[in-house]
Image (cartoon, rainbow, N blue to C red; front, side, top):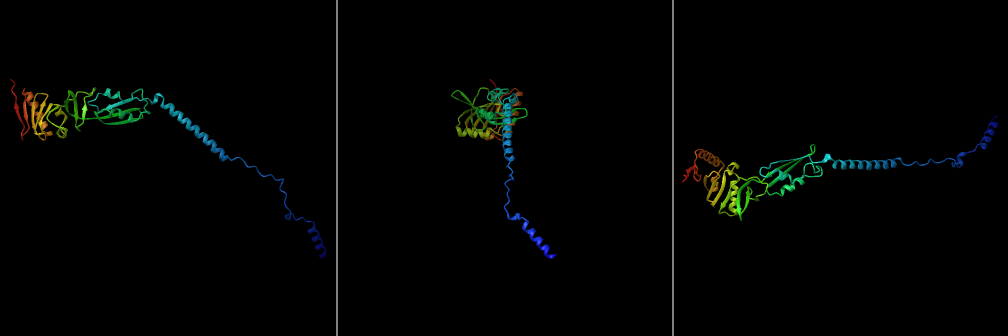
Length: 270
């Protein structure tokens, strides 16, 4: 019985094929085809969409900037006390014509700074109302001078300003007499501290020399100043009171401020 089993196993081993020792034929199995990259296609589509979006936005902006909704509505001028408003507006981008978004602050500042009477210009653009606010700082006049029959004006910084058309009447005194540029600058440094309402009372400043200065008022009063440092803000107010009092009394005369006390001397007519 034992011998029979061994023979049977031996026969089985001979009839069994060992596939592990043979090369497998895999030719009938096809490799999967490589699909196109979806990531690459997505990048192409994204670029196209981005270009189209940029073109759409650019076209919309261009149409808006060239429509009636981009027209300048209003230009407001402030700070012009001596210069005429209409003369100023003529130099600026025009309301109802200029494009609000295509004009810069420089378009408002530069034309005005060419005017020697304008010291500074500030511009604020209101994008909600499409309006521009222009604030002007004018030069402050102190004296008028006449040279070769030409009237010029000197401001508080000593600049010589032309008497321009479109300039409202400037009620500042003429300065006459003997003075060079250095002495004039010295006078400017003192007179610029005086209030405007006092300067407007004066018609003339006569400089014999720096120690002998006379002021003449539009009402016919003469003020003996002596040195210009005698003319302080406090004394200008006292002088104005004396002028108003003597005018009420029907008198004209000389106001002497050279001493510690102010003296009034009436000038009798005839």
